Length: 220
Image (cartoon, rainbow, N blue to C red; front, side, top):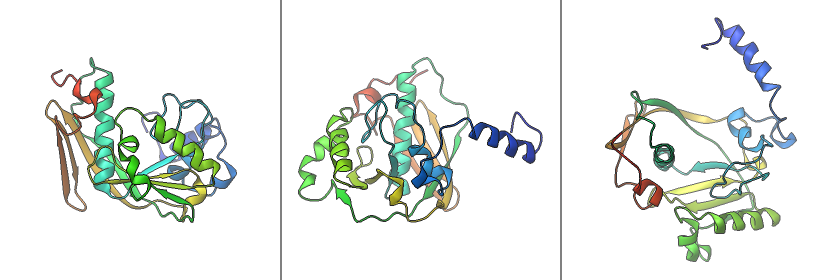
């Protein structure tokens, strides 16, 4: 919107930008971009994530069972950015983020929080070593698994969902959107939602079990 004057110009600019991006995979083409985007880009994945290795690897759609867990995960990753950038000041204003729900359905799911796989909980929730999770995800893909259900490493008792393929989506559009305002400062993270009325706070100790957050320079 900063580059154009009207909604029509914005729509045109968006369409021009879109044709420069890699094509959407055929099995994802009917999906809303918020659902298909994790499976679209063919560039090397820069540093790896919980269930996806770095490099030219297949996409993963990460989600949480509840919005509380999703916000905790987001709060952690926002703090991780500032831990990696010690010279960056805290933002002066809170940022707006959209939480949304999706429907999915699959007959091929692994639940890492249930027996017998829950015996490896420490491996599935290790704060920095994603190797065992990435290896499991690769083996799961080879076996035709589409969905991984796992305990959250950031929200005790929380559950995360990883869709390994967009074929697992049971609907084309996101549903149930909420706007959360998330602010960060030297005391931690605060997240507020107006509709429904909700608030979450994460102090300096909330994610201190992760050595990267433990070293974060709060005063800046």
